[in-house]
Amino acid sequence: MTTEELTVNIEKALDEIRPFLQNDGGDISLHSIEDDRLVKVQLQGACVGCSVNQMTLKSGVEMTIKKYAPQIEQVINIEA
View 1: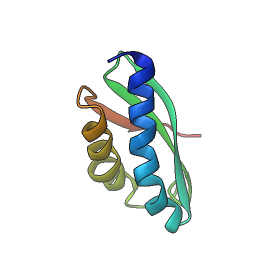
View 2: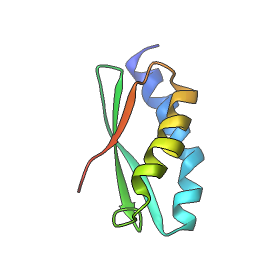
View 3: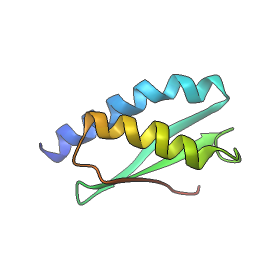
View 4: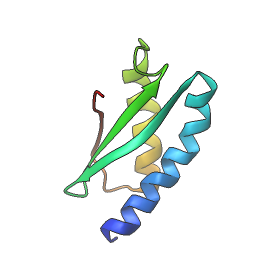
């Protein structure tokens, strides 16, 4: 899978997750992909101060991204 294909697949995963985050007043954006294994995202809006954002990141975001891009090993949130 090329870097471009990987980016497209990760954006598809984020598009699947985004409505749930937006429903709670938040959002998410792709920041970067490193070594085709690490994805950095930025949680936005209500997600920034949410006490369950790490759980959302691991169980929701990371799981969905791995469904679209199985080679991804980790997803981390960067602070604004």
